[in-house]
Image 1: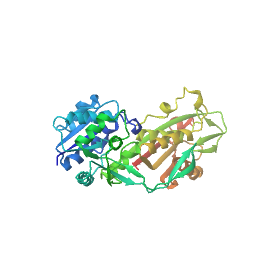
Image 2: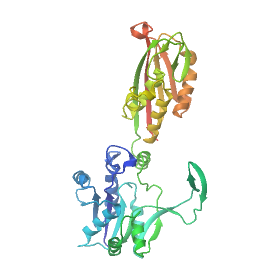
Image 3: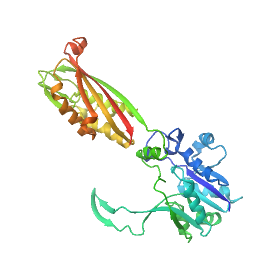
Image 4: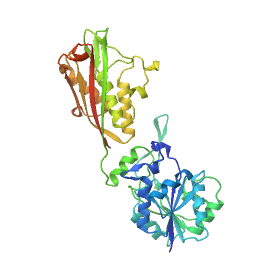
Length: 376
């Protein structure tokens, strides 16, 4: 039996974030697509066919010099058909069609699909649904759905080459996957045991999970932030989420919480995601007088969306007055609550500048912060 692997990687994958399509983003030291290709090469197909956006043909040669490259179509179904048509002159017995964004596919799973094709025109892996299923409406549970007989579909989906080519030629428009095309043509598709680790990278957090499964190095990010606000009229200052009575206030477009601003920028810095001014421009009147927890919470959410957790944070306030020590425990609690971590992962401390500089002259307060992010 001869078989060919068709790896579909022509999409743009915008939900995964990043400046380039997800299949070309790094997973460890290699692009996602490189891991996918290597898994199939280990299973020894007669040929690997990559279906790509025409703009990606050049970079594909660096990771798969032996693969046949086929331009994708406007839909996934068209992309697969393009690959099948490219093989039609010298067809294999079978094809396995796989998503390029599933880098964790194992040779064992590939073999399982090939074995099933010895007795069936189509075979595809799936994992049974074990969790309760809800139907939601307007953010609340509207009902439950019976999970009996439900499966989570995966790839590679394998077929007799002649049968799936005829099915695609007869199929109008797009389809959810190649099983849908096969079934529309009357082909039976055998379900084979899938694997939980055979995840499809769809969202930013999926990169961190895939990295763990690959046994790659943990992604640790370190960022620092620095901020200054001058004194002006007022009867107290906001520092790290706590209002501290003082004969003067801090001046700023928002509530001028210098400690929280520095920590926010430290998190953005660890993500290489700009700074407060980029996300919340001071030229925008909606942020005038804004409470700084809005900024810090936004930075923390950005970290979680990228698949990171906040390991620890350290804030140093530089001032002669007010005295920070008595309020430091409350500040740690406030920051921890906003960041969604335990207080023992947050440090808040203060130092003076020995009467030197603007802080020594009590003209304002400065803050330095460091944040460590670890892949979740």
